[in-house]
Image 1 (cartoon, helix red, strand yellow):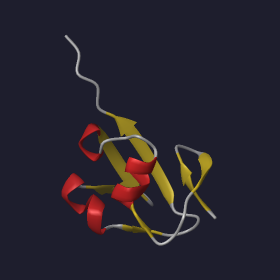
Image 2 (cartoon, helix red, strand yellow; image 1 turned 60 degrees about the vertical axis):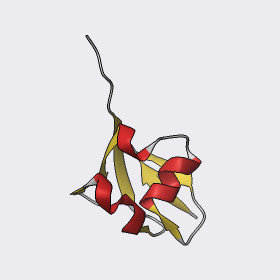
Image 3 (cartoon, rainbow, N blue to C red; image 1 turned 30 degrees about the vertical axis):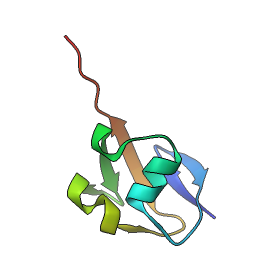
Image 4 (cartoon, rainbow, N blue to C red; image 1 turned 60 degrees about the horizontal axis):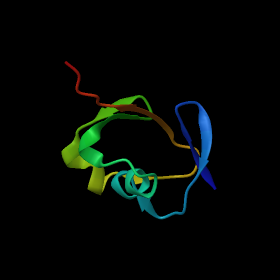
Length: 66
């Protein structure tokens, strides 16, 4: 089973929260902005947000620059 992340199918094991999904891919939850099925998700909600097969995610890394 998979979710669609940034337009690409990505395998995922369910049950899974958004935070678990991010950590499995080496993305620290505080380093990204996430939209889940068209809804922006606050980082404080990542650990409670369940993912299901076929869900759509847009994940953008936060990059500091200078």
